[in-house]
Image (cartoon, rainbow over all chains, first blue to last red; front, top):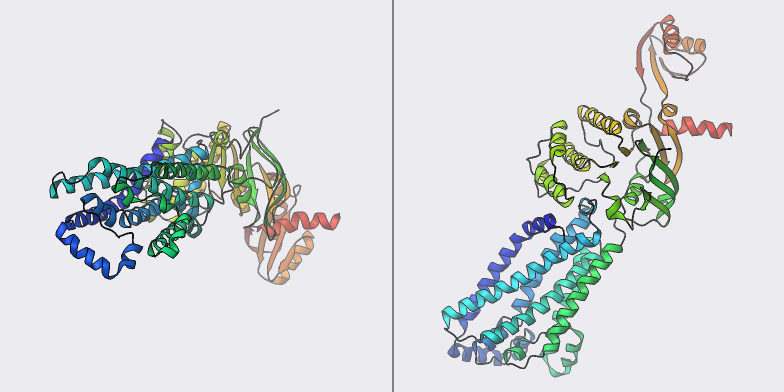
Length: 264
Length: 297
């Protein structure tokens, strides 16, 4: 890793990071604040009136505990999409822009190998993702504690977030791979962003009805099942596959970037 | 025998549609200031990118200090100072911020040379790069290429955007580097630019090496003499028996053995009113050197 470059990277991505953390804070606190067994009833009624729309967004069968509630309303969609946007923005800042504009030439003209430069950028992205998830855990636990003293099952909640982190390492790895594969901004971002959106859409379709359920085998999103984890029936191997996949995607990206011809 | 610093052998890098470089071979010895001359799109930048290890050659080899420029890029780049043709600086930073970052990435602890160069180019490094003019950005790039006192300089159109005063300053810096024994490869599409600093020049056209010549051989003395009338001009030309007349201007080039004094004496005899040295375009130079060779051959 190149320390000076890492510090520079942090300076370039902290602003979007803070903006997205603020947006997440808003959603997390609003949704946790909505948890109320009585209100849950009316939400259930609303859901029964249009079950397919709700289930498309992963919001069905709301459980009775605060964790079930959060898994349903936060981890089904919001905590997947919002950090994904930040990941795309970070990939754009850390890789795509440098290659597309040609500034990468300066970084590569230093006596550091391409692998080392690329690894530094990948590491910055991973650190940003880990910190974002850490922040989500901290703010959720804090707010839940303030609002509903000791109602949140801390152990299960952490496992839930380890799963979410796995998913985001996988998705950010996909975005990173795109930035290593393509030199032009629209393809570099389109690869990771496009595939991620496609995976999310496939998952939404698979949740609509039983005829479409087979689609869940076509998307890695299935490997993160927040409701099952909240209910205590999460499969450890699914989370492990996400982490492993993430590492592979990052590694593949670095390998490709180190060997390819760059038009700088 | 001096050491070969840069060696390009039978390099081909085809971008299609006749763009790229084809079967390029040349070598640059230690301490040499080597010019890369050619019109836009001749393949100068392509060759320099190869030397930086950004692109792999389709065939042939590109070596710096005997090391392969692509495979051993991190080693060759330790010795190289590079100025890209397209600057693409990090616009969000200040000049000094960028230079400090690059020093950090280069693991360079001593910044005396950097400050010296900032002074030398009178660079206002505190501004944001986004707000800088083309010339100021160019200065930032130059400081960055030179600040770690590399053994080899690869400069792609180093004076573009610089005013004449700064072009002069740049020439002085390069001549100083030459005294220190630095090897320099600089590209340009202007003959006059390379004339001041280079000892040897390679001329590229359409991706092929047209010639590699010592500077003196390329230097031609071409003068334009203005007379009071076309008649006078024709008379002077007929007396000298060389050159061409259009209106009242007689254009003549001096051969090595001919002296300017004699030319002036002839011109004076016919009442010359004005004398200027003619700046040759690259195409004119090509025509002069290689058109003639073709005629003879």
